[in-house]
Length: 222
Image 1 (cartoon, rainbow, N blue to C red):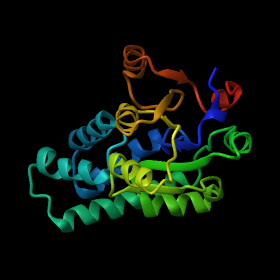
Image 2 (cartoon, helix red, strand yellow):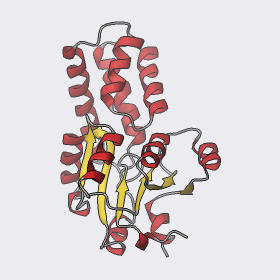
Image 3 (cartoon, helix red, strand yellow):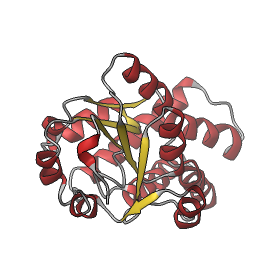
Image 4 (cartoon, rainbow, N blue to C red):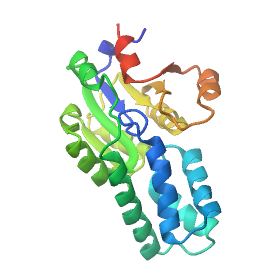
């Protein structure tokens, strides 16, 4: 059983934790690559890289797409096109995707804790989607994303005393676990919506607490 009452701060990843959006992000990466002129094999290579890197920023992924998959310079013009097109593809999909059941009830049950979102997604895009889905008010500690990476965001928010220990990171990727561990946060892995294929063996090897989803986390609270 997890005793969430011990934590001053709860930090949430977005895709696969708050929103059932990992498969939609995969669709958006494939569509963006095709819109740029890639063939199916090249588009799938971008998707594979996205899945491999988990919660890493899209900036990194598109640079890799241009330089390593398409074998061309990662010019600012091309990166900007990809980012804008990907943002459009994502917004169309995330405006209707499932929100984690139990999220509001968990907020009520942990009313004294500070809630943050720290995601690999674009920060402005996150703010727009969370406002549209009426989720912003749940996260009194703020909603943060790229271009800063999760390590940078956590270090900054710890220095500002916005992440107060003890703190728990709720994620669904290897990078979520690695970055939160580097920052000294406890971690729980939610697997129902993850796109990390080896999540079970990884969590077993790292002795990570795993639960299906937010509802299960709520049910497991002491």
